[in-house]
Image (cartoon, rainbow, N blue to C red; front, side):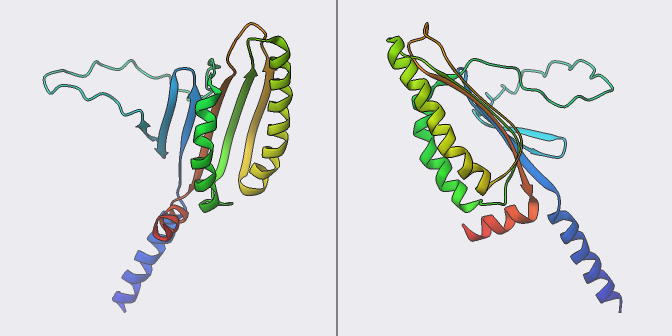
Length: 184
């Protein structure tokens, strides 16, 4: 009888553990790509890796945190080159096929600045960016549960290269992540 109670408790603990949400954030800007993973209050920077400290160095003391935590608001940053973002799209699309409707995108911020040396080309680029977003956005809506979103496009006739800024915060249940890892 006690064996069944212990097995039932283990199964109940595993079910509750599989309901915990884990996630991460991806940020692409002029300063580069940042990827963080989070599980509860724990945040780990995955890319770029943090530089290792030498064994003789001591950690600096942290300042006290305020008692009232605020929802993290990413600061507006300047965008990075659009060509790098285009190069990453096939990798993202392949991963998206595996994660269809399993990942919840909590926040999606996209700022695209169309620019070119010639003002006419910049205006054409602006139209092309808006057309591309108009085609891609329904695909994202159908494949992911997207919460808070902000997409902005603008044209800058003073810049010579187009820029993009992307911030995405995503999460999925731990059980879904385990099943996904087992199927890959």
